[in-house]
Image 1 (cartoon, rainbow, N blue to C red):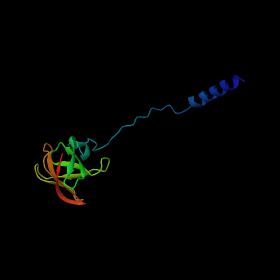
Image 2 (image 1 turned 90 degrees about the vertical axis):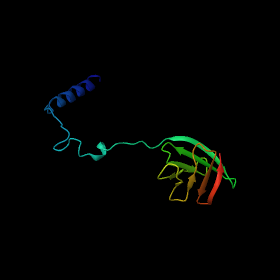
Image 3 (image 1 turned 45 degrees about the vertical axis):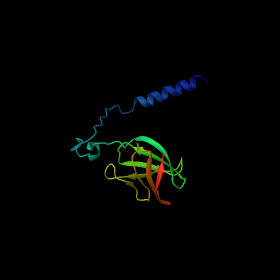
Image 4 (image 1 turned 120 degrees about the vertical axis):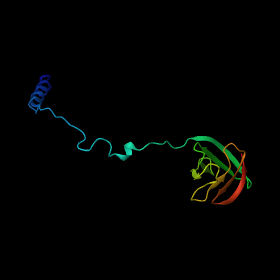
Length: 129
């Protein structure tokens, strides 16, 4: 009973010993593969801006708005619910109002205690941190 597995193992080893033993060399690349044609590999990488401060603002209509100010000083994320989806707003120059295509805007500075915020549901209003 113990000899059967041993005999099967020896038979399998003998069968595998007869396999082709040629060396196989795999060479990557080819003509023109010097990584100069790969534009994505050669393009400079820029990380997205990080959150520098998060503030909660109470607006004139008593609504609460959550703003994450980003480190590029050109953009922010606005949320109307604490766990809601952020709405990204951006400006072309520092100090200019940040706007988005979906109706959100904010004007003010991250270090200030008050800003003006507009949402699709409400026109621009003063909000305090």
